Image (cartoon, rainbow over all chains, first blue to last red; front, side, top):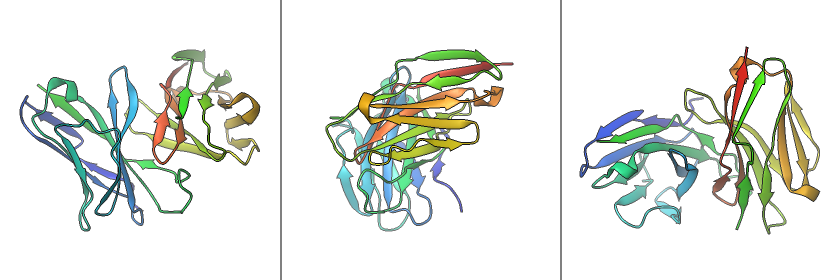
Length: 117
Length: 111
């Protein structure tokens, strides 16, 4: 049973370019979460999605960042016009829908390391 | 709002020593869930344990054990007879629908 898949594992972009990060949840998982790990800042929640719905985007920067989880295909975290401060590790996690709100275990992918030059 | 504090930034031990990583949480919820994750040098995040607030029984898994104390709002993690492969950053987290992480404790186990 494959785990959470993320690609690319490493991504280099120049300032002003767009970054697209992909996440395929574990089989049978319908919830996807994105987290960002900035140097010296720890892991911070960005967004929580279910298929075709954004449930909680309270951690997303208001500009340049967007996320989707379409009916078919992986979840995408998109960063437009990247700046150096966007350099970080971006982790995707998935969980099953057990009905225990807040109780689902989130399993993480290997992360995408984004470097903005 | 929930908050998780890991006061120990870095811990260094010699192999075979026991080590305890502290985690203190704050919450107003009566039902909540706590987690520990390990981030080895390779960078991935590995799930270790999930604990719900209404089950105070402590848990042991091999060399790992967890002590959940509601009275002190703590969920500490002990590694017995540490090994070099235990060297990693360990994160405690609370789940409110999203994970709130502590700052992490870097554990270095020296041979």
